[in-house]
Structures are given as structure tokens and as C-alpha cells.
Amino acid sequence: FNSNTGALGATSFTGDGSALTGISTPLSFRNRIINGAMEVNQRGDTTSVTGGVDAYYLDRFKATCGGGGGFSVTQETDAPAGLLKSLKVAVTSADSDIQASDWARIYTKLEGYTTADFGWGTSDAQTVTLSFWVKSSLTGNFALAVGNDGQSGYQTYSTQYAISSANTWEKKTVTIAGPTSGTFAKDNTRGIHIFWGMKGGSQYNATQNQWNTTDTWFPSGSTQVVATNGATWFITGVQLELGSTATDFEYRAYGEELARCQR
Image 1 (tube, rainbow, N blue to C red):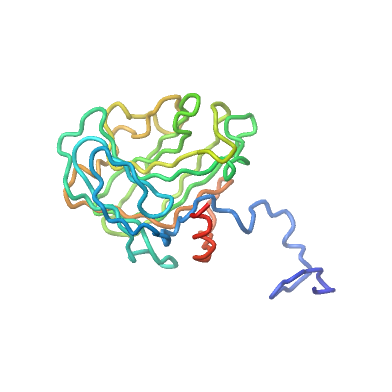
Image 2 (cartoon, rainbow, N blue to C red):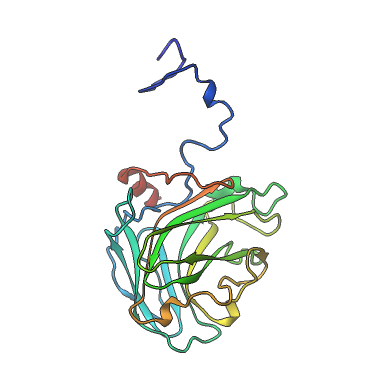
């Protein structure tokens, strides 16, 4: 205990602490994503994802595919500076004829307790910011969506993020104003999900940058990753936080992240 500053357990501190007043962003538990650094991979699966598959690969991240084509999901050591691992999608069989009801996506689900303070579905709905690092052999506009997965009626926010340089790590930031209507679980069931679209048929085409009451998560014109044989797509450093500003990635120790994955 430092009697001059009143700091308990501080390892280094100077000044009187006045600069710390008014901080609105928490110093810990900023990131609501579990395993956003893609380091935990308890299953070690590298199975191809084809029509009808909906399974976890890296912890807390699922892959699903409906219709033709297929891809693998693996953990890789290819990552931007400051991160060690990434999730890689590699198309092993192209879907050259994407039908209206076809889909493929990488997604993560967040427990209701984890996002209850977002206040989504109420007049107190908070703005959140999603940030992540992505790399692909393809360029263009890619599909991204956040939603409640149809809990007592769909609430889905769909948008796009652009990849401008092939095979180059780029950081993306998306700010989303929370919805004031709809049902979002606030207990130990699924609160929200986040989709990164790998392909989507016309029935999933969405009006961008607004909340829709339909299962529409793939904006028209988005890049159909699974339509290109051999295409690759990587992601890591995924962070979802309160507020309209993306802060630096909240890196957690492996043991702490593993325990969160095991909850």
C-alpha cells in the first residue's frame, strides 16, 4: 500500500492520480469475445466443412456450410504483430452454383450474462465496437453480421468490411448502435452471435447497416469466398467492446482464456 497515493498493490505509479478520473472504458473485461486470439484449440480438428456440417473447431468458434463446396478450418501461426495464432479457412472444393438457400460462415456465440449490460432490446441499448484482424487471398467487400439468432423473432445487423490487399493482414473496425427492440437473452443461454460470411444465397441478402427483423446476414454483392477453389481467409484479434472506439486488443494469459473456454 502506498500511503502517498492510496494505491493498493500497484507495481509502478507516479503523480497524484488525477489523470485517472473520468475513465469510462474498463481496464479489464473490455473484450467480450472468448478466444479472440485463436490460441485455444482443445479439439485440434482439421476436418473439412461441407454441406450439413455445423461444428466447433478452434474453441468458441464454429463453422457451418449448407449446399455445395467445402473448406477446411485450421489453427495457424500466421498472425499480425502482437498475436501468435489465427483461424484459417481454406476452400477445398468450390461452390460454382450458389443457390438461394446456400450458406457458409464462421461464427461465435456470446453468453447472455456476458452481454447483458449492452441493454440490447431496451431503450438503454448501448453502442458497441467490433474489431478484428483479417487476411485473405481475395479482395472486395465481405459479409459480417451480429444478431440474436431468432430468439422470439430475428434481430440482425448486417454490414460489410473491405479487404483491399490480397494476402495482407488488415485491421477492421465496425461500430454498431444497439437495437432498442427485440429479445436478447441475459442469462446463461445464447445472448448474441457474430457471423463472418463465407458464402450466402439470395434469401440471406440484407439491407446493410441497420437492424432487420429477418434472418438476413449476407449483404448483396459480398464476396463469395467458397466460390473460389483454393481461396484462403484468416482471422484473429477479435474484440467486441462497449463504446464507439476500438481500443487495443485485450490480450489474456492462456490459462485464463482456457478457463473461459471451459465454462
